[in-house]
Amino acid sequence: MLAALVIVIVVAAAILLTPVALGSAVTVPLAKIPFSVDTSSGSVTLGGSCYNSTEGGSVLSCGSASSITVYEYYFLTRPGGVIRTADTSVNSTAGSANITITMFVSTPAGQQVKLGNQTISGGVGNRTEMVYLSVDQGVRASGQYTLTVSIDASIKLAGSTKSSTAATGFETTFKVP
Image (cartoon, rainbow, N blue to C red; front, side):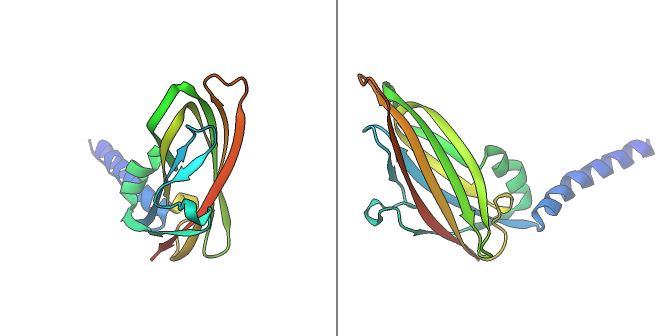
């Protein structure tokens, strides 16, 4: 009976202490960067509060990162991935699109962290993207960070005999207090 109790205590301690060890703190910063990708016209058009088309993709400020508990990050936020896509107005009968999103984060220390690629396939139309950045993506210390987003797409509109390719991107900054 005592051995079972010790095992339960050790397992509980491991579950509670592992996120703190990985995050190096009890709270961690979390930046949320929203943008949208529209392929309905056969090209790629960006939108959202972190992208301003009149600025031509130049660096915009997307605000500050908030602080969340390390448990909320590792058990609730992180399992959903770095980037999450929601189809807001996608129509597969109007055509098809293969979209590749590539992202980098530049830290205040001058390091560049590659966040990898995400490929989205489906109908043409508008998709809303939300990027979640925290300790696993190099967002740890106080300072100004820059997220660079590159988007490459192959789009085939209904009735078209061949696909067109399009590329665009933008940079946005955010601050960790």
